[in-house]
Amino acid sequence: MDYTISILGSQKSADDDEEKFELITEGNFIHTDGATQISYQDSDVTGFKGAQTTFIVEPERITLTRDTWYGGNMVFDEREKQHFLYTTPYGSLTMGINTEFVRRDLTDCGGDVQIVYALDVDNVLVSRNSFKINVKPS
Image (tube, rainbow, N blue to C red):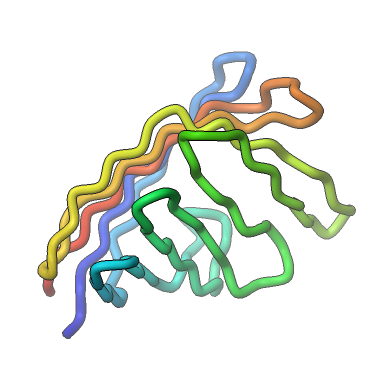
């Protein structure tokens, strides 16, 4: 079954500039007792055009992965700060993720995920970000 995936995202930089995006696309949704997988093709809207993006929603954490050489796998865990290697055409840097809030409301038919987090480099705030994801059968 195909699913409609709606993502509202925001990024507010340390100097209070804010960018928002909305992506509505078709994708895959697999819900099990242990983990839920939400995957879709990214677009220009998110800055990762052509990448296959997957959110793996587990009871303890949520992991965002992209099948591309740039970016990085991000782990959202309210219990502890996570780090990931962010790769760009100009080089790589290690970024920290402080997950402030995660909400999961998923069933076999879809549902909602919300993530609010801060990104830093060397403990210096880069931005505050959020994802609001809604999944429903097409």
